[in-house]
Amino acid sequence: MRRLMIMLLVGVLAIGVGIVNAENKITVKSMPPVVVKTFPQAGDTAVDPSIKEISVTFSKDMMTAEMWSWVIVSKESFPNISGEVKYLKDKKTCVAPVNLKPGKTYVIWFNSEKY
Image 1 (cartoon, one colour):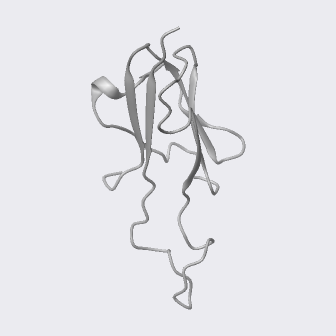
Image 2: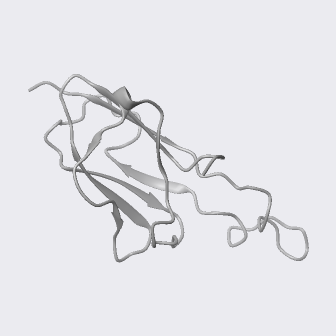
Image 3: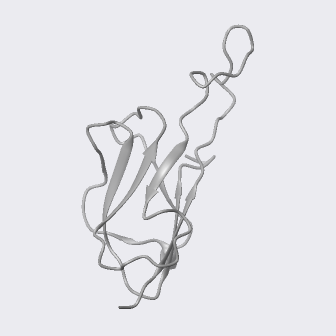
């Protein structure tokens, strides 16, 4: 079976506000969410093209009402999203149904300065 590479570039950016507390100390609570897990794992070069979902899990609850951005680096490297992108009940995991092709490299950014 031919495998493909999935490169999930995870970039959740803090944009200047709310990253320190009243004492100007950086804390886990004051920091924005970060990516803690992806499926397939970011950088995996032996992804089974028959998988039907790509997911990203954040460290904190996310705004789940379409407040997310799966950023397209290029049309050629973005997977075919075959249905509704949604958050799971845990409010931390965002899932996209996909149709993947063997022998391709896919690149996805999660959030960016622009979004």
